Image 1 (tube, rainbow, N blue to C red):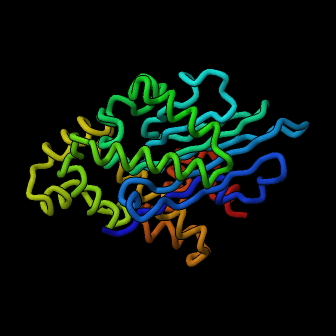
Image 2 (spheres, rainbow, N blue to C red):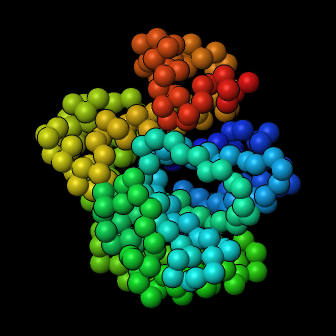
Length: 269
């Protein structure tokens, strides 16, 4: 399957990073590559110049550990699939460690469909029970990011080994074609490739992810064009708009702003 890469604003706008605001990403082990896009950290220290941490839709679901949380039961949340951008004003000190899961595979770890989480944040304790406190304690007590990752991966591999919940095969096959097309396949063509009706495809996405296949195609297309802009292979926004099927530049800019909250010129100076 083609690798699906995701980008978040701190990677694209590295000029925003400084000694008081750091964002880093780390790759998973080979055994978890099909399930985990990356691990990430945010470390922010309150200063006179408050930072704005921006999060954009990437088609993924995250477990986020608050390394400063005083309560183990409230020390981790699950952030469901996003369909629009969010911003956090970093007015206090933050230390976060996150696991970014591919949305079509995360059910094998959460035991619930993503549709029950889409657009919401819930405490990991509400999903894993007592096990959530144990892993929060292990992450918070780890000596550095490498040890956090080791402890988390042991837990995830154990969950996979004991897992009895399988991801929906129609959803996974759909994601394969969506990513291969860079989000530029019609629902009709997708259904034809899958040998299912359009109605069945739409029903599966609503049941499993809580979004329509059209919505997720838009997110994948957006992430793919961000990769292209970040690499600089196409320097003109008009070229990007044409390649990714936008009928004109205003349409492209409107769509970009919807997902990012900024115009392309504000991101890519």
